[in-house]
Image (cartoon, rainbow, N blue to C red; front, side):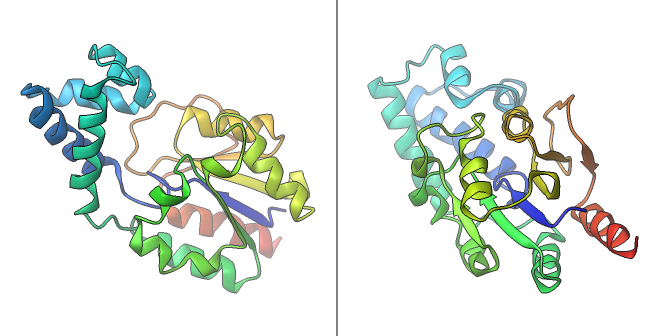
Length: 212
């Protein structure tokens, strides 16, 4: 029976996809004066950020990249990013029923602190691991293993829920279940233990297990 629920943040708990894409497109236009098509922008969903910019011919440590990141960050901070519908209720329900809740995210601590709505409910989580808290962020299993070892969790009772291939690899490398959060995502994930079309599907899973 699953007792420990660890979540990714972006595109799993928080609906960040469209705001990120829109503000990045805006930042690219400000810096490069190029208006990239939506088809080009949506490649960001299948590539890492570094690979995406490399495809555009923008070097990682270049002045152009620094300017893009500056404008992208400035524009994104003006957007209040929200939970997906049903996520807030899911988290409250899980916590109220005594389940362990954790976060493993590719965001660093400062980036996580930009998510004001998540911070309002951060006390629901027993632990939060950001990318700057470990030596090897996802897809390495280090972040997940830190949680499992610190809280003496049983791997067979633990699930990591995320939206990307990197999430899947991290979970499977940590020898725990992986749940694919498929709401409003365009990532193609071939390996998962549970497919969740809506946050309510997670509710159905643990409630059906509880009855059994």
